[in-house]
Image (cartoon, rainbow, N blue to C red; front, side, top):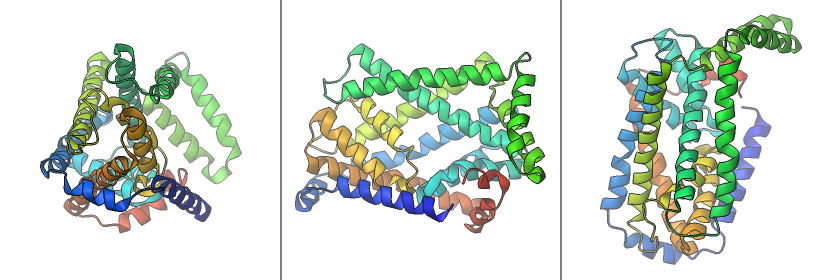
Length: 341
């Protein structure tokens, strides 16, 4: 990643952290931490593993049109490695590193593996927004001044995701795909001659791979796993909140908090530093009227636990695959990563 991009991310992260910690009584935060029963943080950590198991299973389904049988061990290992890399390095590098590493091991096209991550993220966004819309339409939880802003967010993002799925499907139809390919090759002419054909070929395979060749049953399975994945995450967030006497949130009210955290995670700060923290504080004080100290105390513990399990498991997965961090440096030199970075 270029120096100016890293510098920008670091400055943005530092600004978020500064705003997050403004006017906070740290002695009060320590008092709050001492009152938390250990079973709640432990429960939060234990729910991390089924989350990643479900995510790995869903990834295997998305990859099935390109390779029918990929061992669950590989899917889980590279899922964990990807999240570990994203949490330790800026720029969400893990989102590209994990499909590239899996593709090299399983002998499939890297463009196809990368496309499954795009589809994975679209399904994530779709189901988080569907959960938020259901919450808003059914009038669950408690009224809050934050909800109108979340309603606007859902009304913008949900149709956008559905439109993206429609465009991807249309671009890959027998009638329109020749035009899609011509457009890609026309746009590739702005690139240097030596890399033009390779880039165009990569883009064509990538667009093809975005099409969900799973049939309705396969798409429903992916949808069901997406719902299960986010339900487990929702439960883990709510369980941790139960340990804080100043957070009187029922399970449905945790849905808008989940939506805020999901959107904040898109900001490519290393380990979501600052972006997640400020978003969490904003959501907790706005959704349930939590004090600034309670919101900060919860967020610091929540953020620490959120990173701990995937980093620890990711290091173990890296060892199981016989890899080390040098692989990330080598991947940065590859075309698939250099175009993103």
